[in-house]
Length: 120
Image (cartoon, rainbow, N blue to C red; front, side, top):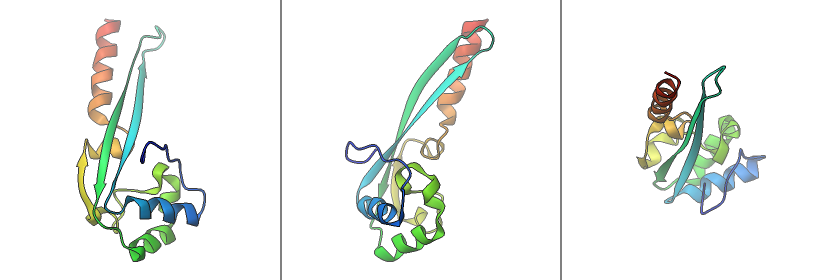
């Protein structure tokens, strides 16, 4: 989520460049949803987790290098915090790294415990 706009995976180089450039000295949030279902009862527990990545300046050179690797095209929002060129440019992360990467482990564990308790 960037400035109230949901960003999917970039569709081409131009969009990837625009996404990464816009994060320079700015922030972007990830929203992860987790649903745990016990089978066969159908008992469920669900929740969401939001993490925000605050970036330092991202130079045009770094943007070009990251886009050239093509890895960000499989990531919603067009960034990967584990990228060797982007990672050093992270100022801070509000939330957890695993949430930014797509699976908030603390939330998942909490929901699993809830479903186990509800099905006991």
